[in-house]
Image 1 (tube, rainbow, N blue to C red):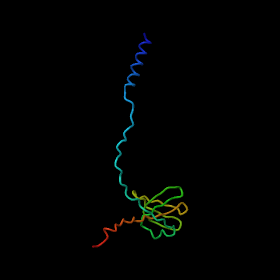
Image 2 (cartoon, rainbow, N blue to C red; image 1 turned 45 degrees about the horizontal axis):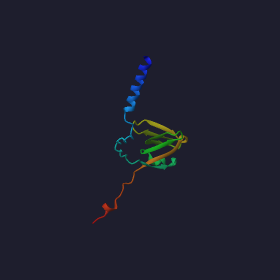
Image 3 (cartoon, rainbow, N blue to C red; image 1 turned 120 degrees about the horizontal axis):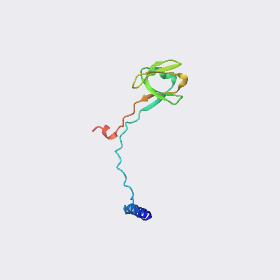
Image 4 (cartoon, helix red, strand yellow; image 1 turned 120 degrees about the vertical axis):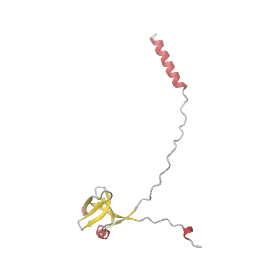
Length: 120
């Protein structure tokens, strides 16, 4: 009796799965519209000796440890620099030996259209 009941249950369950339509090729999900990213800020690398020209200007410092920090150059000597970090303004000191490179942001050129620039 138990075997018949078990066999009937298995038959019903397997029949239920067999009655479902076979999975078809999935339709591609609607993708969200792509966000337009602002143009990335271009940078120009400057030598450590030239940093004195950039006091109170924004600089990007890459350390030998792989970290990247950006902020306003507040102090410059031959042995170290100080920057006020973007955002919170915290002061950070970098020894010259710990700096891999220093860059300054360069304004991106605006695209020019030759048609609109023509005068009639």
